[in-house]
Image (cartoon, rainbow, N blue to C red; front, side, top):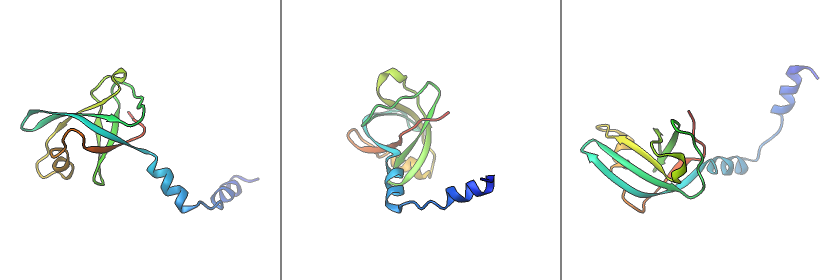
Length: 117
């Protein structure tokens, strides 16, 4: 089979839209806010616990979602701790900042199921 025929054959497979949406949703994990510490007026330390084990390496980042807004944050906790900590700087007028600064212990956010970096 020629190379372009192989691509055409692969592209001819139809996907079930429901399965595709479900698969995308599974890429995000719920995470509970277990601590939020204001370090000063423009910096806070947010600690969350994902509902599933979340393996990562030091220096990696993960996408965080709150109310449909998503941003990447570097993970500042150690992999063996079982939590994710983020040191977040306030961005005046920032769409995500407005949401992060209202979070309290017990609130739920989402984290991408895979870290990167």
